[in-house]
Amino acid sequence: MTFARVALFAAAFVAVAVVSLFPSAGSEKVALSVAIDGAIGPASSRQLKEALDAAARRDAAVLILQLDTPGGLVTSMREMIADILASPVPVIGYVAPAGGHAASAGTYILYATHVAAMAPGTNLGAATPMEIGGMPSLPGGDKGDQKDVGDQKGGGDQKETGGRPAGDAMMAKVTNDAVALIRSLAELRGRNGDWGEKAVREAASLSANAALQEHVIDFVARDTTELLQLADGRTVDVAGKKVVLATKGLPVETLEPGWFIQLLSVITDPNTAVILMLVGVYGIVFEFTSPGAVAPGVIGTTCLVLGLYALDFLPINYTGLALMLLGVVFLIIEAFNPTVVLGLGGVAAFLFGAAMLLRVEGPGFALSWAVIGPAAALTLGLALLSGTYLWAARRKPPRVGGEAMRGQPAEILDWQGGEGHVLALGERWRARADEPVAAGDSVEVTEIADLVLTVRRRDAGRNGARQ
Image (cartoon, rainbow, N blue to C red):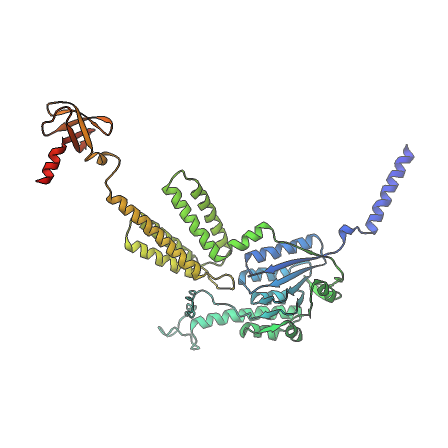
């Protein structure tokens, strides 16, 4: 029995040793892939962060970051760049598929990756920063002047000492900051910093082959198989350590975005966030005006919370948000207390607030007048419709309470002296009259006081009306 136990322990030891010497298929290195398709925003940043965490947790050989983006928010772009620079797993930036591009923020992100590649038929560049603040232009119109930032010299000419408008000075600061960022990334990865500066200052763009000739990318690859083959053997700096890539023939596993990232990509669209806010406000208003309906309150509260959550991720102007909410409040008051001033003021406040809501304008993150205009018109229409109904209801005679009793027909049940009882609206009432009446007479109610009706003959009222 003792010998059998010893043999069993020996066999287990040998099995563990063999497993440790020959790794199982489950520990085989893989290349993970994540696709950023569309505008760079909070959802993109979250998606990349989760992909990098998954790559580090699974000890992946590389993470392929496939880009097809028109650009996006600077805040999200910088978060993604910081995550790439701090990643313990090498990141291969790959502009694909054919016909895709890595414009604006995508160019900076591609510069930050350890290896940069493009598919044939793609392009990158046009990395000039967008306008900061200001009002969105009307359809077909030109952008207005930007708000002055900084000290003003000379009183009312709104010029700085160099004779340049303060708005241009602010854009120059932003542009210089962007140039410094792309140059620092180019120096870190050994890429063409001069062309990077040209892409920022002059919005220059390059095709895949031209980018390879300009030493902006490392190679051109038709697909991920060729991408991994060409990246194999390259030495890259990963978090301060030199790493030689061994990527040839690696299996590629695509990481799909989860439901939360998909939801975030929808609600962080500024136009969706504004619609959610409006639906939330009106849902709560309808719940207060019709207590017990439940559904408007539940839907409104949910939409309002989602709208506020989305705005928390966006670089919003809180003055614009306050003006939008103030405009909605004015229009709600207009609905219950019709006045022209509150209605017009509410629409104006809503439009100005919506125009000022975002501090920046980027591809995919600009408020559309196609949303702002109809939303304001719908809000004003609902206010006017509610006001019309309230005004009509105010002009109609009352239907409940003491006021509703006036003019109602009644029949004398019994009468003695100047008082008695009448039947009105199917109920027995005490009544009095200033003229002689008798049981069975038809009368009408003229007044009600302390649950006592004052009545008069119906024919007397008509005769009096004729005279």
